[in-house]
Image 1: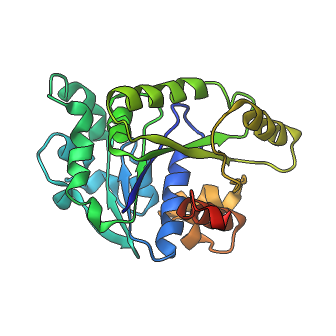
Image 2: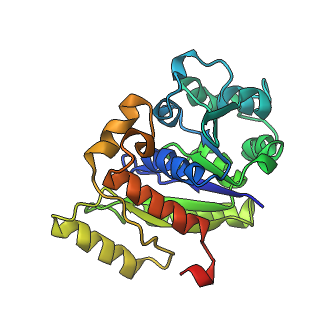
Image 3: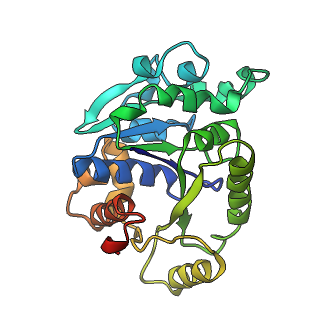
Length: 258
């Protein structure tokens, strides 16, 4: 049975898109069939995977509005084992257009249900806010992966996100769980990064992934070339870190592996 992982944090700039792109590429590299769903109107996941977001007509927006099916919007095997439901700025209008639509929280779930048996992992990149698009993502997901930047205000907003996940669980999707927290933009040269990691561990009663994603030039450069870092610089520390995270995600809950 496949797993649908929602990558969410309402704070911007914490590495959500970077994590979605590179974790999905690292999972696909292991031979697993992966689908990426870009639910952010900025469409950075779409362009970061090498797709020209300005020139696609069938996107998540058309999918949510019921104009196209998931099958019609799908860009299959844009990398080996990796397919994409793309997005662009049109998606920013979805919130308003869906006002009054019955069961609008479940539009993405219903669409994904038609194709999900093809994939072992579905990763959904959310916008940096707790809006209708994020709620749709959480209603379609099994777990929520939370990237946290190693900086002073890391914990700020996290309790709000956890509260939102709990509300969704209570009212809309009883299956949803927190997948875990992954630290991003870790700088080994600063005491601050270390303090943030310790602080979150002490204050957060959640699974924290051992793999920590460092600040890495190659990781920052890769999206402008439309490639995941595993393709752009396969031996970089960024690529290796996401491969380690992929292994942890694959073996989540597997006691023998720990």
